[in-house]
Amino acid sequence: MEATDLQRELELLHADSFGWALSCCRRRKDEAEEVLQTAYIKVLEGRAKFEGRSSFRTWFFGVIRRTASERRRRRWLRDTLLTRWFAGQPLRSSGPAVPPETGADSSLLHSALSRLPERQQQVLHLVYYQDLTVEEAAGALGVSLGTARTHFDRGKRRLRQLLAPQEVR
Amino acid sequence: MPNDRDLRERFAELRREDQAHAGEFSSFLRRARPRANPLPLSAWVAAAAGLAVMIAVVVMSIPRSGRRNIGSPEISITEWKSSTDFLLRTPGLELLRTVPRIGDWPAPTGSKGGRQQSPASGPANRKKEHLP
Image 1 (cartoon, rainbow over the protein chains, first blue to last red):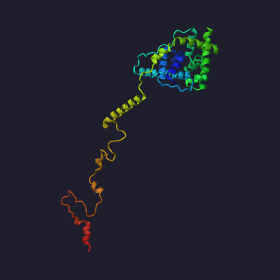
Image 2 (tube, each protein chain N blue to C red; image 1 turned 180 degrees about the vertical axis):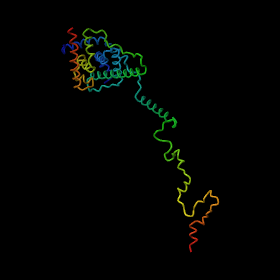
Image 3 (cartoon, rainbow over the protein chains, first blue to last red; image 1 turned 90 degrees about the vertical axis):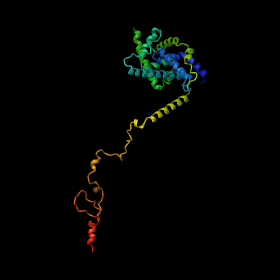
Image 4 (cartoon, helix red, strand yellow; image 1 turned 135 degrees about the vertical axis):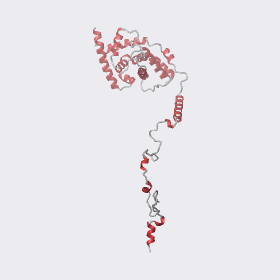
């Protein structure tokens, strides 16, 4: 794929990619922006190459997910080392996980989602938010279809339970 | 309990809110523009090789005595001698190590007035003398 084509595809996906990056970064906006930017650099520098084995969207979502987990791993390592070397000093926080100005419904959804395991959150996000099929979600998450389905069913059931009592009040 | 459609609507709402905060793609692209001249892979390989050579040179230049020498002892086992080795050197050790030959008795030492035995007066010669 040519650089201009890549750029056009990325632009078309930008808003959805940002939403997915937010989900991968536990709704931390600054972190999501950094991850998305790094993912763009990877694609534009050719460090991540699209080989047409899936849709461009699924593939790029996979790049974002890996970038976010690499960043998280690096951060964890750095924080662990810092804790060991400079024990007692407060560590830098990556900012609050609260999203900017959200409606009442969305904040209910946030709090319910945040109580689910990460995989369940991600698969629900990909299916409901990004309108992907469970199969495409499995591709983006790099898991088998069966695993994605299990996460999806469990996550959906749990999310309904979490949202139900809040509506009764 | 919310059904599937309710869930979709909630997520759609969240999506609309997120998209308002997504920012412009062009601003991301400006920040994410690839470096004008990124170092090629060969440059990294060359740098790594150079570093490896430097490390090897430094390691080789360290004097051998400074290194730990566990596997190969400097003194060979055939040359090694016990510190109590002298105790095995008993007086008269030469007598025990050599096979005496008749007629070649070592001259007795330190016996004053002892009969000096000449090689000719040894038992073998004496035997010869008695022969017809």
